Length: 298
Image (cartoon, rainbow, N blue to C red; front, side, top):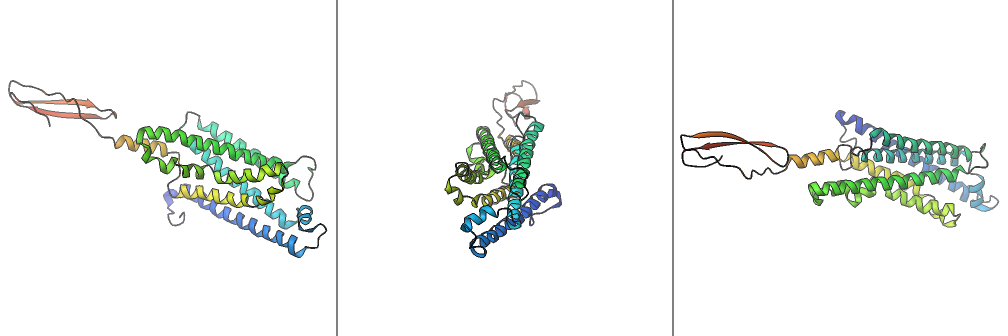
């Protein structure tokens, strides 16, 4: 869709989105390929490893094939959460909060996650210098917290816009931007749900975590691409959506010329201009022609 509708006039918007899609596809492919190779080594090539495949995955977590998978996963998480932070700033474009504050908060959260991600990758490497602190738990818990907060913020803002626009346009005109599906996609709610299903058992050291260890990385890419698809197709919320919808309503309002006064003349034909103000702030000039002993308006 981005390639088919690519225009120079939309290069600043579609260019980064196209690059994001390509990079996400590459990282997801690397993650799936390296994960399959590591699993094959654990269950096929090195099946006789002392303790079996589970012991192999624990002991050999720092081999190049698994390290590549972890690098791809962390970079993919960076991109996904950066996209989510961008959507949060877009949602606050028409709020009373200054734009620089929302951008600063988003950057602060993202850079904090970036630092934790780097420490996590260093910790799981063979030459880790962080043997005490558990940055694995810190990184994934912070990522989950970031996604939960962003989900709450985006859904909350869409509810506010929904209420405001419903009063102006009516409920039938706002489902594209503020419907249930829009809220699910815009907030990456699908990815947040799968992250909760994985992180909670992981923190509790429950074996059920192994069931959800793989899906979040794939759902992450799917949820991000769903946002890109909505934005590229013109269905996603933008910084100008609220202003455009309210302006369209004002331009499409029906002008009612009520309570127009009549003039009565006793002499020859009389001409007058009357200026009326409508409820939309538009001034309407009424031209009135009157003849003797008659009334009328045009």
